[in-house]
Amino acid sequence: MFVALYRSCFWYICVIIGIGFIALHGKAFSSTPPVNETPIYPDDTQLTAVSIPQDIERPTYLQPMIDSVFGTQVIRISDQVGFGSNAMALRHTDATNQPWNADGSLLMLGHTNPAALLDGQTYAFLRWVYQPSDAMWLHTDPHSMIGTLSDNNQLVRFDIRMDWSYEIMHTFDEFDVIGLGARQSNLSTDDRSLVFFGFTENQTTLVVYDLQDETIGSRLDLGTDQVGTDEKTQLLSAAQIGQDFYVPCRNTDRPGWAYISHFGNDAPEKPYFGEAFVVKLDGSGTVNRFAHTHHTMQDNFANCPMVAPNQDGSRVLWASDWGDVDAPVYT
Image 1 (cartoon, rainbow, N blue to C red):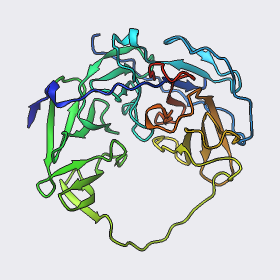
Image 2: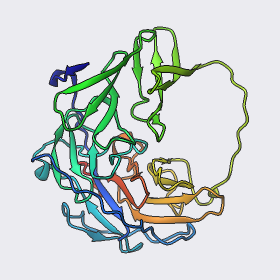
Image 3: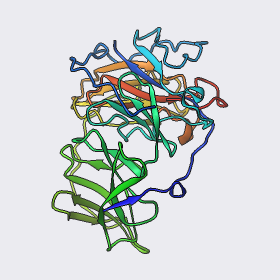
Image 4: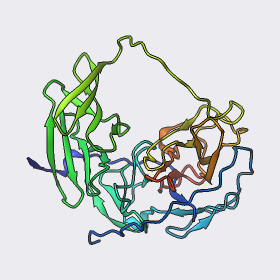
């Protein structure tokens, strides 16, 4: 079943914060097919203190610059003039929401709705897209996203090539509203299993849904006592890292690594302060250091860098106000 998607269903976000960037080592609808090359990463090292570059001018839109400490290339990929927009937050949604599509040919900056759709390789602006709520890319289809309708109980599929329409995949009559965790939910890499929240007046339920069989595989009524084991591996010492950071693991083609970005102002003496880096999950303390984020140290959601890696982890995306809290947010 297909339903028209109306402008009135969506709301706009305009906040005052930073700039969004890509760090890497090394109007018609179209995109650049990705080249199958061996991913290149920054050198393996340890998280020791380095100088944060000062008085670095904000990069020009789509003009590469080099991080003077790490030698990585940084590109600002969003711009009010370039996008023809006056929105103050032209950035991705969250660290845990994969901005690149399945084959890396497209990139969505979904903090606003409509969202900016970019070429995933050249970062050229393509067009605006009216996405469903909690939209996330499928792993197996580069043209499709899934999401929900605002304040109802329907799961929908959206073909990025088709404006103003979506397919209703399932209506969950047992819930008043469903949500994908504010875009922090998860799809299995084969796109078969989805974790979401189901809400009624008196209960919140965590649900695992089988998209192939269209059945609920398991559910957990939150708030009940659960007994289990919890194995932990210390990745970094207390001297190396503080409390305010995001840890997305959307690098599905590079398992064994966790991408980290710092926000807030809790630990300026820590060696990771104001930095985008990745740590190996074997407890060795090995890291790859991508770039300095140059964001204003504010404890609020809006100006958090929220580093998000692409699938193979060779590129990372983040937001920054480049030290100016009144600057527009670019990605």
